Image (cartoon, rainbow, N blue to C red; front, side):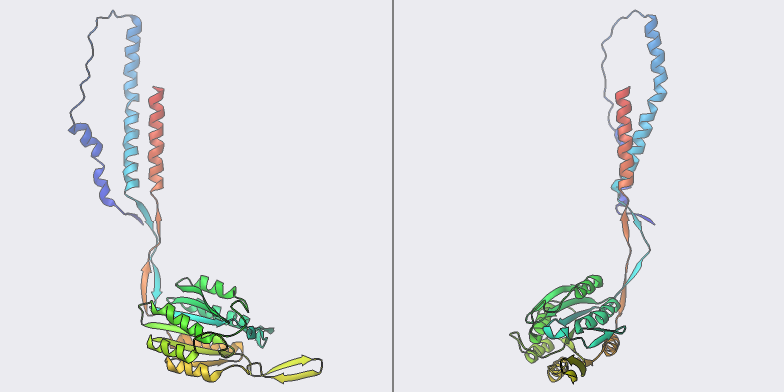
Length: 326
């Protein structure tokens, strides 16, 4: 439907008529002169009478130009169909470990062996797509913690920046406490009472200035709930010069600390040994933190003022050209 933002401006449409009949006419004095009529004068008079009908066209064009100009000033807009926007009122941060140990290839996707970060990207990107109505943020941490994406409703940007992350980008060690502290700092500025942090790591805290449990206490005081996810298989076959042997690639995973962090903040600890378990964890998180609570509506709007404005300018140019011609 077409909507006029300033519809009251249509009240100025009769303004030219008010000026025409409301103001006193300008008197033009002509000096009297006695002239002898010749045939050429009568011919000129006949030509002038023929032009009277022609002079009406500029008045019509000027009227149309004025009408189109008023329509443009009234800001015509095209309103599309209303689009429902589910808003949950939840701020959700995702903290992803990029330390060197994330390069272990103990996950499989579609029959292909991949490293831990690739598995996180595969499953987490689907989780991000489902979080309609949440404001999402992304923290990447290794030796240091960085805010990669501030809180935003733009899920595509969050997903893209997660997919572009690389192992070792933030250092080779693991600063779990600093990642939690950064999330607390960023979420502290928000007024919402529903603050969630999902922290994914495959190791123990080996760097940073803030102890993980101390950071968890600060998070609990600020009402931040933390869900921790331990990444990595329990068993992996390694082939070398001496043959094959079984190793535990998750020997450095500090499950005790991750459990304590979650419990202090009212969250839960999960263990993801493969992509199937990781996907189940995200599905469970969808159930623990329902996606949609209430809805708002957005109506797409497109401005149309340039069409009547262009017609008004075109008519004005035509009037100007005719005036110079005659």
